[in-house]
Figure 1 (tube, rainbow, N blue to C red):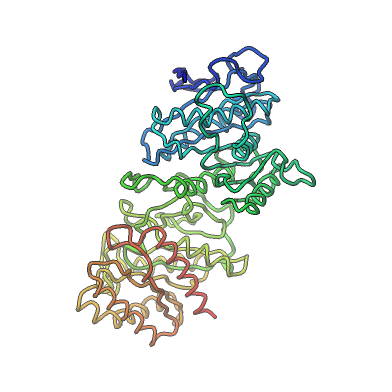
Figure 2 (cartoon, rainbow, N blue to C red; figure 1 turned 180 degrees about the horizontal axis):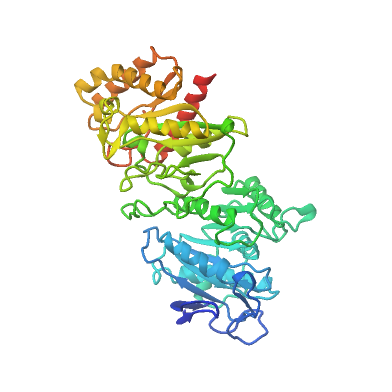
Length: 539
């Protein structure tokens, strides 16, 4: 078995910099079914849309992109650019994607498959590429059982074709590498095309699904002229009982890659990252910075909704309401119906983390989950405005006494935010989570009374004596478990005196490992339960 690895300068005419990367030749000798001589792919003169287009690929290659900080999963992902089987959009659907994959800690391989008009040759290249990566698993520190295949547009068709025809040898065996499986362990299709060429726009006949077909992630948009491909592929996978995750946005079109300014281009990477973390999770102990998934862009609403259509909720309490969970990509997907404020009191589209009072500690809270679940149950004209006021480490007595805590006057700040809230909408409720700082015998004994005092202060500031307040229990994971459970009982006792005060359970939720703060899944579940409890009060 002979593997040729060469280091070449990867650059194109419109690139600013060049970088040396390993490149693997798929076929050391003759390329199957190729009549033309081997040559370097030719870049076309067409650079419209800022896209680098390659054609006349007669010597297929894999370019290796190694992550600067591997995430420990040892997964490798082969990327197939699109281009209608005429050209390869090598940057938009290839190298740019590989660099994003690297930023997640995964190893990427960009495939230059044969074009133009060589679909059978492209499938041969795809099968060989999967086998070649497996053969080089040790060299590139990837697990041969964690090889994924990812395709865009026509590259999506190629990825699907390879993922469903791995039992079929499309070329005569060349060497021992071809003894390895060409089945990808997972497959990702981004705005795929040509998957619905069957009768009445059904699944293309060359795609042969079976029970051993790998799990799929599929992303598309309704307004994509090739959008039906995502739907028929998903249906076929579902009917064959193959795990599949489909995301379809209303708008976005086709061929957007990762480039900013397109809602689909800005959404699919977040969803794909979350799916990848479940499919090939980073190794425990490999930690990203707390801010790794924080949103890079602040989005302002094009139009602020009419005041009558804005429901405002104030988030108050201490660190579990301020948020200490790990922000994941799905937590940063904005909705035009979910708003918040920044530190300058400007209205922006909400993304986690919401709280800004403790920038060195902020993390995932329950706010976005609450709002997402709430807007499913209220009229479509309603938008939700989340106003953060929680500050970590604050005791309930400090709230009542308007203490200056971590540079925030707790009750005064709350009242100031109420004034701001009324400028944009109607205050509909308060989300409260607090008590960790009151987990002492004295604090527990006084908690129900203090909660009554503070609830009155909150409602007075808003001007609604029956304003709904929903509180969350403390978790069941503390070293002070007996005191935390006693405080939870005090919260429930208080609900007997206040019909507009509800308490949601946290008994089944986990901490993030510090025995104080909820993990990300726990925060999202709290958000769901806050929404359910609020709606129950309002009935």
